[in-house]
Length: 179
Image (cartoon, rainbow, N blue to C red; front, side, top):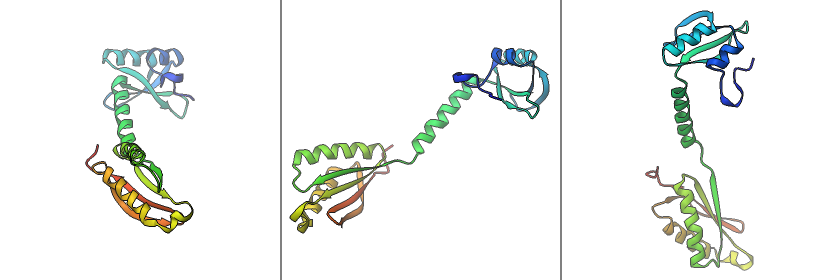
């Protein structure tokens, strides 16, 4: 049986009383009051200043209803969801550079990287070499070290520059004191 009232959430109050004649009632304190007429359960909930909310169905198809303050429950759920979102695994962002990048372009790309780091993402910085540029890996290392200087305060280098084929990469992680 569907316990929801459509897009609005679970069945509750008057809608619940219109659809079901009796229910298993669980009080605000968690005590089981057994099978009871749904209208009487709704009257008890209203007199307590709460809502009658359907939380499930029993084995015989009778709805299980709880007396609770629905707005407080929604607030608790939103708060829990926000906390879970904050603790969720962050993505790894990547920014690519060329050996002949200009100072203004490097600073612009690093502003983007600093924004990613402030949001809690790890960033992989990659310098791509073309043709004979690969014979001068020190150029790529200089660019990456300038990038680390620009990212100072936003992130820290967690892996040193490494040459892999025609790319040189390193990783920046966000600083711990950012929240």
